[in-house]
Length: 102
Image (cartoon, rainbow, N blue to C red; front, side, top):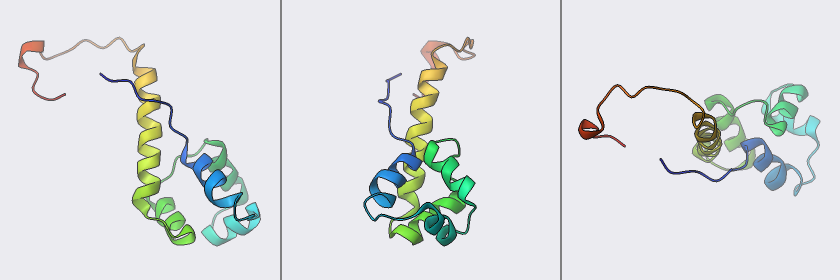
């Protein structure tokens, strides 16, 4: 399996590309999204993942697409998964010669 680089968490993208450049207050952004400030902080810190619902909220608030936010989350999760899977001790249930999906 190929290794992935370490992509940014969508919360970091939100902060660096949207909140800081537009000098938006956390309270303002949380209010516009209809979420608590503590939940927005958790997203920005990378403690919360971007859900489908949040992806739609962010897309409306920042004129992006939900796919942008969900793809960012997927890339982040996959990179983390590749790193964590390196230490997994899983026995293959399909002989290597019959594997068709990679």
